[in-house]
Amino acid sequence: MLGFTLARCWPVLVVNAHTPFLSLPSLSARRNIVLGLCCQRQQRGAASIIFTMHRHTSSRSISAVVRGRRSLAGYPPCIRLLSTTSWSLPNAPSTKFVKPTHKFSSPGDLSSKVPNAPLLPVYARPEFVLSHGKGSYIWDTEGRKYLDFSAGIAVNALGHADEGVLKVLNEQASKLIHTSNVYHNEWAPKLASLLVQTTQLEGGLGYAPNHKSTTPPNGLQVFFSNSGTEANEGALKIARKVGKERWSLKNGKAWDTPPGSEQCTKTKIVCFENAFHGRSMGSLSVTTNPKYQAPFAPLLPGVSVGQLNDANALEGLVTEDTCAVIVEPIQGEGGINMAKTEWLVQLRKRCNDVGAVLIFDEIQCGLYRTGTLWAHSSLPVEAHPDMLTMAKPLANGYPIGAILLRDAVANTMTPGTHGTTFGGSPLACAIGHHVLSRLSDPGVKSQIKNTSVYLVERLQLLTKWFPQHLQPTVRGRGLILGLGFKNPEVPAKIVALARERGVFVLTAGKDVVRLVPSLNIGKEEVDLAVEVLEGALKAL
Image (cartoon, rainbow, N blue to C red; front, side, top):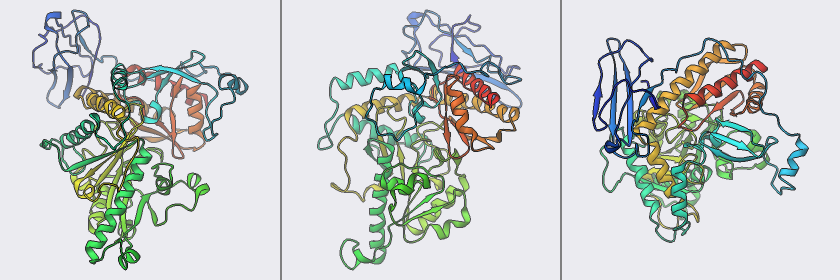
């Protein structure tokens, strides 16, 4: 499908703003299609206007769906939509950014900007200080502008200083910021319900897409935390309790009194190589990177490590003693490695066979980063987890995390078995509700998918133009993408070279440059990012 963006242009085709659906005859041009929509002020139209180009062998048609009523307010009398006619691919690498465009101060100058900062030195930060941002761009204190193609490590889904987020933040902060979980607040149940209803509608945790939701929603429950690490800690903790209760049911002995308390063995956890689940003691125990783990050993006992997509090893890996299996459907920090659908189905079946809780860590790959609500939303329900953890984009930079879990697992928990002081605050949940409502808009989802197609096409050209450096396949899906390098020493150099040319990207794993931009980027941002990568590759 080919997406469309708002632009000011001469209208080619004028349509009444209240026309609910427009279908045009087939057109020969694949991309060079222009549609204009003229809307008089007194007939202001749509909350979202979605143009889709359907490509078939026998016909190509364009459909326009007009929904809602108000978003055109404030625009000039004529509101037009123009197809992305210039989304054509280049014939050769750009030479614009062979030389650096951003000159940095010497390391000694940084001390004058951050004088005697008593910060624990656990980050190797570059020698500049960030000041402010807007949209997908960010500025440092010297006035240099950067394209943030890392989105704060896949966090700023709506970009920096988003007006809608700021409005909600200011309104809620002026009313109520924190209550603790001793009391109810207005926004935690609203966000929890929206998460459940959206999952039921779009698929996940046992629900196929377009499941008829219930009022009030049931079948799923939510626990809010302050971060993804905390969400993973909570999920592992819940799985431990579920494992003990399932052991008790199977063996006819109470797990919390002798002899059951001494005999219960269903406490072991399975994770996978190249996983990243956090840096606290429990989540670090299932983050299989010796560099992160070694200084803090001994870690949580009873953890087994498997290989992603190795079906033959599942029987020996996931056993009757396993209480939890935690996996990322797409490994972010570990190298943009994707779990295969067939393997996830087999993993789900093996967990069912032994009564283990299956946890999907979608902290980086969830919440529309792949183009669907969850990375597993479009998978068969036979591959779905019992629990899912989320965090990064949910409040667009305001700290929040959450566990979404099926009733069969959630009902194990009772008052006092888990808790948090700050999790689920009215401010965090108000922002989260706004962000999720925005991201679930059909126009936004369509834009993510269309932008991803174009970005992947551009990146695939790089693999052809720079075969001496790049692996042949672009990794990932949606807007969690990676370029694999043949030399593992090169990705860190590319990140530095791109930064010197005004674009932020990240490394992942041992040999990958990771691209996780804001979810509302468009062609302009894609072109700039890829042209800078071309310049960086030429500069190697």
